[in-house]
Each structure stands twice: as C-alpha cells, then as structure tokens.
Length: 223
Image 1: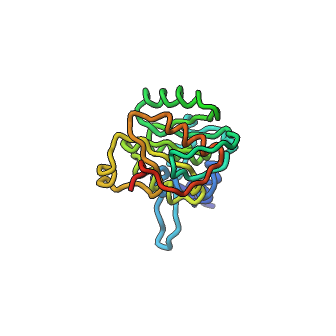
Image 2 (image 1 turned 120 degrees about the vertical axis):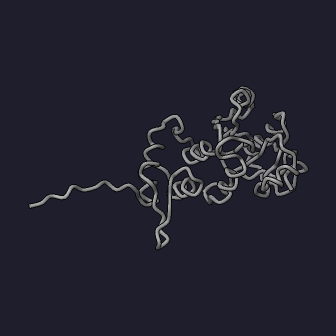
Image 3 (image 1 turned 30 degrees about the vertical axis):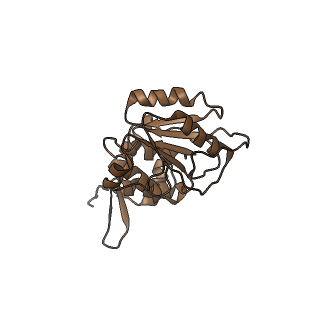
C-alpha cells in the first residue's frame, strides 16, 4: 500500500495566524494589511498568510515584550490645556529612527511625574509590532524613517478599530506644506516641530494620564 507523505501547509488563515502569534484577530489583520505579514486573498476573498512570515516574527523576540495594563486611551487634539486630575502611569511608544534621539527621549520622559513606561521603535514596522503586543496610551512618532515611514504607519493605525482611542502626536522636521505634499496624515493629530519640544510633549502626556478629553483644535495641528 502506498503511503503519501503529508506536506506541511505553507499558509494559514488570519485567525490561525493570530492564535500562533498570540495576538488578537484585528492585530493580525493590521499586520497583514501593513505588510508585516505576507498575505494575499483567494479568489473567494479569503485572506491567507504565509507561515514563513509568521515564523519570522516568532523567531524575533527582540520585537516582542509582555503586555502591560493600559490606562484610558484618548486622542489628544489640544497641546495647551492641562488638567489637575491625578496622574496615572501611562505607556508611551516613541517611534524614531535616530538612536541618539531615541535615547534622549528615554532620558527625558523618565523624569516626567507620571513615570511613564517607555517603549521605542526604529521604524513603522517595528512600531506596529509593539502596538500589537502592548497597546500604548500615547504614540510619539517621527515621519521620515527608512522602511515603513511615519506616514504609512499612521494611516495603518487609523484603520485599526482597537487603536481608535490611541493618543498620537507627531514630532517632525517637515513643515506643513511638505507633509501635505507627501500625502498628509490622518486628521486630528498634532504636529510639533523638531528639535523635540519636550515641555509640550509633557503637557500632552499629562492630559493623557489625567484622562482629559478635549475636541478643540490646536494651532500646531496639521491642517
């Protein structure tokens, strides 16, 4: 009797990928849509994900860490208003490709009164992995980065329902005209200039820590 050797599957469904990676289904979908996972759709419209790309993520523990309890998530649209509510420790993700500047962020942010938990990423791809593992309360992002830049990363984040309440601020050397010419960023995200204005970032972090909601506009927000 002939025996047929079973050939391992080279792909899996999005739900299977989420289970293998230990993330939510929507996070796996975000990673597939942004290119972190190699994916395609069948003729019937079903997404399939490469097992090899899943194994690459699993084999890279440097980009994964234990999730922490998130504080309340608010989108910040006013960089001036502060609130006297008690501050809550928050989780801040800094996305910046310059290692020296990333280190400066870590030093400055650790001195803030809400004692934030700081995570850093060198580009948009790494940032999406970080967000999938541990949902940040505040995202501080550069725009000009190698690989996946801040423009693509922010548009990917804006389509993820589970990140809808994430507070985001951009710190960039690009001016408003340059940002617009390069496709712009999602509405409602403040844009601060470089060199990094740490006092304004601290004001935003204090609002996030205090759970402030404000729908007013900011002069420094990208139009």
